[in-house]
Amino acid sequence: MNQILTSPAEARAFLQAHYGRPEAASLTPRQRVVMALRHEEPDRVPFDFWAVPEVWATLRRYLGTDDDGEVLRLLGVDCRWVRPDYVGPAPIVQEDGSYYDAFGTHRRPVSNEFCTYEEYAGHPLADVQTVAEVESWPGWPPTEHWDVSTLKDKIQALNRETEYWLCYEVGGIFEWSWGLRGFEQFLIDLVTQPEIACAIMDCYTDLYIANVTRVLEAADGGIDMVYTYDDMGTQRGLLISEAMWREFILPRHLRLNAAIRRFPVKIMYHSCGAIYPLIGAFAEEMGIDVLNPLQPRAAGMDAARIKREFGDRLSFYGAVDIQQTLPRGTPQEVQAEVQERCQVLGRGGGYICASAHYLQADTPLENIVAMYTTPRELPPV
Image 1 (cartoon, rainbow, N blue to C red):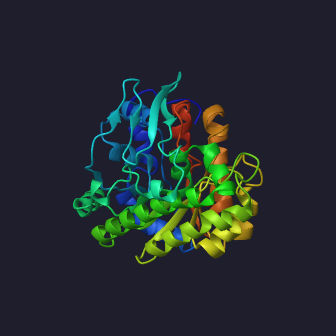
Image 2: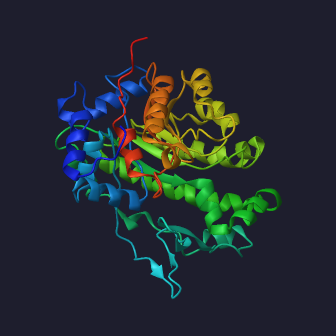
Image 3: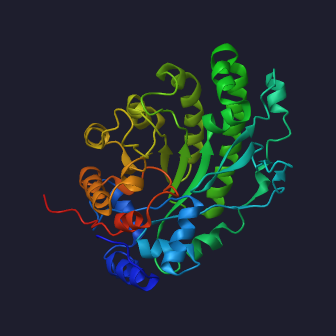
């Protein structure tokens, strides 16, 4: 594709001719993902889509629709995400525009030329000195703040015309914990007073177990995959040592995953950065099914090597570069990378193609369209 399509009508027609008619395919989107995660090659590589709100708004305008589901259908996306309604107290907004969210973290909106994002404005547990203070903190939300009674209706609505692969997001244990304590202080805690760090992580783990249990029970088999996360890598290496990860982070994810495994779902784990040294443990000890997102420009994260070494035990999600190719490349370069990822990671199954993180607001629209109109069928060997 050499240029952007200039009207919503042209765009809709172009996308419709590619993968925008799931009912016309030989497999439903859900069947396609099921085959891929069984390490079998489906009719084509399954795709997912995740993006910041500004990208969603741009695509809605471009495609001439107010319906996010229509955007996903036209892009040929095989996955859908479902969540319970939050019915707890409204965020507490401060005079400076910052606010406390449903999990008690203190955030503020920050804008640049492309978008508005959120950063931490403070850390509510920065000054706690004892485990008792952590456990008695009034900010821990009860599970009843999320209404699961409408989940089955939501699932039925998503699957009205065809069956999609349905996903539910739980949350991060390490990440949300340092959000309450402060990043630097939390890392210090892991060395000097680990009981504080562990108490915060245990409270989050307990909350996630309670929430995911309620959600999966209410969904009654309608959810296919649970997404958990904790970024353990930087651009060049691990954020903490492997020994520290094993001592503090792994046991809590094992406990969470054991609760999830009570239900017939897959587990997808997200960890950004150069996390190659941990991938074997993710597969063999942590017991995940899908690793997300394979950040391609991080050190050691070569897709071919990871597929070769771990592809018999793990499936993969993501891997299309958001640091350079999608925001700075040409549409032709985007399509070349997408095809390469599909052929390397999708051969033999075991791959859901997506960007390596949320599509950012500085991503050219033509590059997004190029990604989702790339041929998804694998050539014969």
